[in-house]
Amino acid sequence: MAEDLVITRDTSKEEQYQSIIPQIEALLRGETDFIANLANVAAALKEQFGWFWVGFYLVKQDELVLGPFQGPVACTRIKKGKGVCGASWAEAQTIIVPDVDEFPGHIACASASKSEIVLPLIVNDEVIGVLDVDSEVFNKFDSTDHIYLEQVINILLNR
Image 1 (cartoon, rainbow, N blue to C red):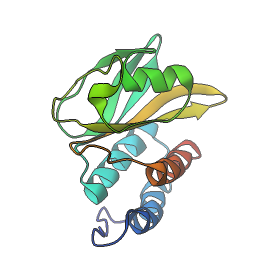
Image 2: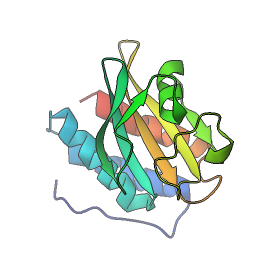
Image 3: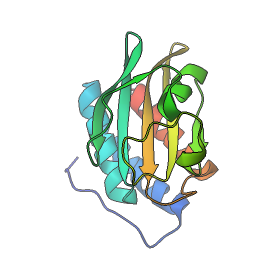
Image 4: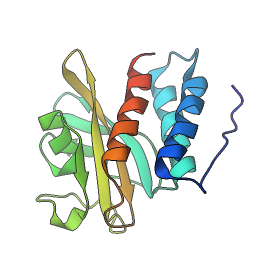
């Protein structure tokens, strides 16, 4: 696939996901390198939605370690159970945070971040990483994001 995406912003959030997901599938088709695919997914989501930060943390021993991302510099290492990413890893669940300042133990990698969604990447019942998305707007993420970002993760993990 060409490296150009067709970005649609004047439609509903659901329609934007329905437009970008087939493009992500095409972008990843034939590529077997996991890190390259993570990088392109982060870039495609950032381009489509203009979120403040989009990226991946990967489990390495007892920490999440920063992987491919789009946005300002980020925390490099996160302990299991710490912050939203560490909690998502520990619980093996998606966590949606409408106001990061109200999340107990939130790690403020960037003060501009106001809301967040974190989804675990699970292979053989083990969390291997997380997809972390931050917005500079409060209450940005909802069940629509949860549903469609899970689809994106499924595309990534089934390559």
